Figure 1 (spheres, rainbow, N blue to C red):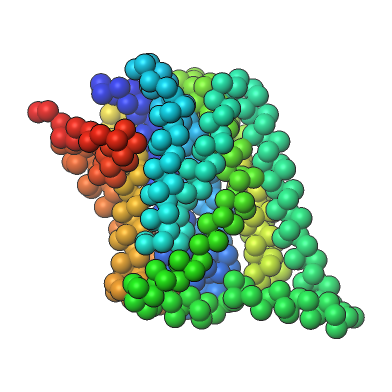
Figure 2: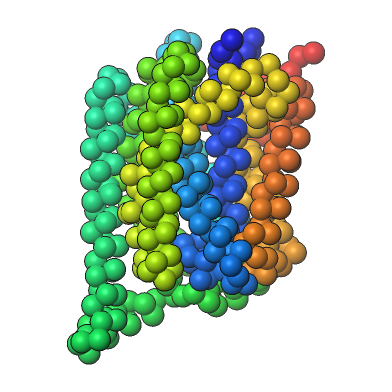
Amino acid sequence: MTATAAPTGRLITLDALRGFAVMGILAMNIVGFAMPDMAYITPLASIPKTAGDTASWLAAFVLVDGKMRGLFSLLFGASMLLIAERATGSGQSAAQVHYRRMAWLAVFGLAHFFFVWFGDILFLYAVIGSIAFLARDWTPRRLIQWGLWGYAFGVLLTGLFFGSLLVLELMATAPEASPQIVKIYRDVMSDPEFSLTGAEQLAVYRGSYADIVAHRLAEWGSLIGLVLQSIGETLPLMWIGMALYKTGFLTGRLDHAVYLRWAVRLVPLGLLLSLGAGLGVWVLGLGPVAALNGLFVWSAVSRLMLTVGYAALLVMAVRALDGTTLLKRVAAAGQAAFTNYLATSIVMTSIFYGYGLGLFGTVGRPWLWLFVLGGWAAMLSWSKPWLMRFRYGPFEWLWRSLARWQLQPLRRKI
């Protein structure tokens, strides 16, 4: 039996995939909550630095980094079409509904970035989602073609940028390097963003809430930088997600053999390529420039393969778990994914930042998995009981009410 639809009209498969994705995003983001930026890129910036940190970094690099965000981007593209269909079916303008939602999502994203956590993706999704929606009437074939070409173009541009940094590093560290090249390289690497100590961020995020907000307000330009840096990956993935929704791939409507075939084609090779990229970074000494190339360039193909391959595996997992308590709790976590995403940021920053428990930069990377497990347990524990009593998660309700400019009914009729 395929776990596709619930009596409420929700698509269980999409909800469950979203639940798995939001849980996976916590596994990806936990280093960003607990350590300076560069620790996400290379274990050389981990605090403390141990063999366990390197092993944990490699495991996350191969299995998680970028893949869960990619899955979330696919699902965001699918959700845009689902909401558009429901808007049209109820006699509303799909475009008006969509752009009102994106406008308020951008507001949530700005509030999240400035007042909670710098690693926000909501503003990015609002901007890119506004562009992706223009392709809503394209055929699945055209969406996939544009998605693949767009993804390849994004990798090319990213490769030129980070690849040039690697060439500069190799030239500057060569025995016969000219003084001019060495100076240029040192000037580039003197940027605090390349710091392995993260001294500036340690000072900021161990400080007061007011100091942290002031720092964010001064860093507002990084939001624009994130959009420009990520559009080459996020927009193509949203298009591919729209195509996979139209074909029924993401809603579990296809035969089991289809998902098995794509999982077999993409996951083993994707993991092998991802492992090769990670080992390449390790061979080059785990330095910031090599690690940036490994994360954003060398693993780009494997990241796309694993994003789609994981989606196929998870659809099969949804079918295998159909009717179980676990699936219902994961689907509930996905139905409240917006709330779970924001609540995770609120809770984790309260644990690690100076205005909370002040653990920023003090917990080793392997131990961070305990916080991930705690976050997963919380998501699975509260989401289902809440949704048994209420129609939406708290932030979902607020977003829906603002987008419609009218308070929506929240409590279920029992």
